[in-house]
Length: 252
Image (cartoon, rainbow, N blue to C red; front, side):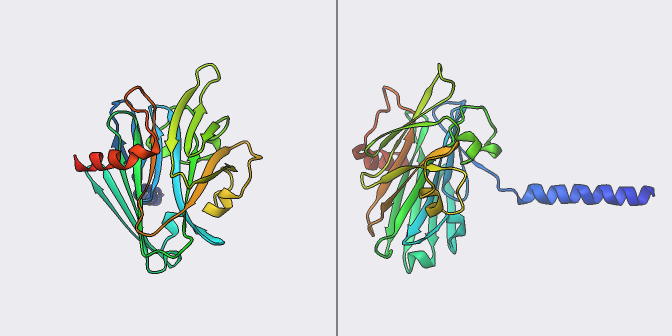
């Protein structure tokens, strides 16, 4: 009996170890604030712990009536060059083209800037994004993500391509800002419905888990930028600043 019990215990431990090994390890990007961090991974989804959960940015692609999350695309490569992340994708939706996303943490404030570029993509391909899930609660890096339960009571103020998310306790509201390409079309959506980017985008705003989603059409060989940041007197950006800002960050 003791031998059987020992074998069962060993089996349980082995299964637990395998499960732990199979769980993706988050990539932590440091910001200028030692108590803050950006949680990334091998797909372009980024959560902002500043140090409270200040939101998540998630990307996807849309082509006509089809859409996919990056992890569903056929071919992808990922590299981490001292905190500067590069994602590259190929897929039937891209035909013979390539989608590239580069991400770099900001230095003057808590935040992140993305550069999106393409090569030889088909006409009409769109980049999808979703932002929200700013719970204002303290969580671990492994708990981060675009989870419906984190989206409750988030308020979005949209001025063309500039978004401010208000979150937290009613008398102690905090904010985080996002900048997108001016071509962006954005709508309120239901974070319970994330089976695909398109399903998320058209899900509607009648929900207890609101998120802001958007999309814009990609032009081959043109660069686009998305910036998520906490606004300060030293960091008050508009979209025209982003190309120069990104190039300065990656040249350091």
